[in-house]
Amino acid sequence: MRSAGKPRTPGRPGGIVQVLAASVKLGVTSFGGPIAHLGYFHHEYVVKRGWLGETAFADLVALCQFLPGPASSQVNMAVGMSRAGIGGALAAWVGFTLPSAAILTAFAFLTGLRGVMGSGWLHGLMLAAVAIVAQAVWGMARRLTPDATRGAIASVAAISSLLVPSSLTQIALIAAGALAGRFLVRSDAAAPREKLPLQVSRPAAVASLAVFVLLLAGLPLARMLFPVRELAVAESFYRVGSLVFGGGHVVLPLLHREVVPPGWISDAGFMAGYAFAQAVPGPLFTFAAYVGAAMQPGAGGIALAVIALAAIFLPSFLLLAGILPYWNELRARPAFQSALAGVNAAVVGLLAAALYAPVWTSAVFTVPDFCIVLGAFALLARLSAPPWLVVALGAAAGELVRLVS
Image: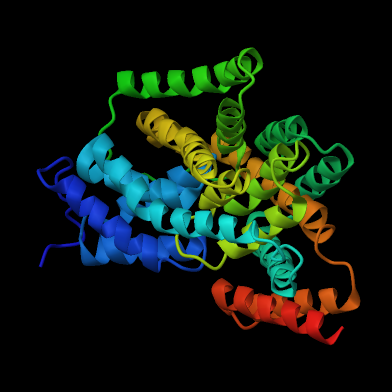
């Protein structure tokens, strides 16, 4: 048996196929959200296959927690890159993402059927989403705001986001969180770590960062010059993927402000899809495929789903390749660690604000609604029930309330 401490050589023949096979397996079995995904990855890649050592895997997790975007998907892409280069990263993304993206695309067409949007079970899905986000706020707050200073940063971020709701406000609050953390949060120097196994040259890293910045700046200009929906979708989802710190749940308010006010998707449809995304395996960011498909019925919706899905994940791919050669040096600096702690606290505040608007305000209207949310939260937070079970029970409770009311 191969030792877990001896990762195999990146890029060896057949590596892409092996990465794809492992990622497809994870894509159809990884229920439970990002934290659970990391546990699945550790078992599959470190314990079972021995592609990475324990320390190298921990370093990859630390790197991906720092970057904007879906941390669990980035860890999987990073493992694929270490195994088979750029092709391995793409294979890892396809295998882990495609199953849930296909399911959510199909669900988008289902919600477009007559009578579905007003159903009790769909409202129950929305109520389950409230409980899931509340549980995420609770867990992140306990972990990322352990002292008064970081609690204050989170509180200011939440209040500011609610009073001045815009994407620019969120960017400013993340930057302010970094600045506050730099000067107000103490952090010890990181212990020496094993060198990461990803082999990305500095020229390739610079090129990746240049493409990232070029798209971030150029897509809005192209959208103004060529006002077509496909380009607008690509620009919106790429920008969201570039700015989401804190993982999948923080994508909710950013995406909501991009797609609901312009009328691309209804508020009820958006929240129902978000709730259903909790019940499928794989990354939460595949919710983008649902939103794209829900914008337009038929083949046009499938095309928009593909565009939205690719656009929201592309920043993660570019940033992962771009920051890797500099990560070991950065994470050893106490000042950088302090700034990162401030960013994480600000993210908690943004997520708390999202819990109220749009999550709570778009779903909870009556006493039975509140009772369903409270029960779902208790199942998640106190009994550690899996999200898919909470979503199923929420849908059933919503339909029951509709029948008896």
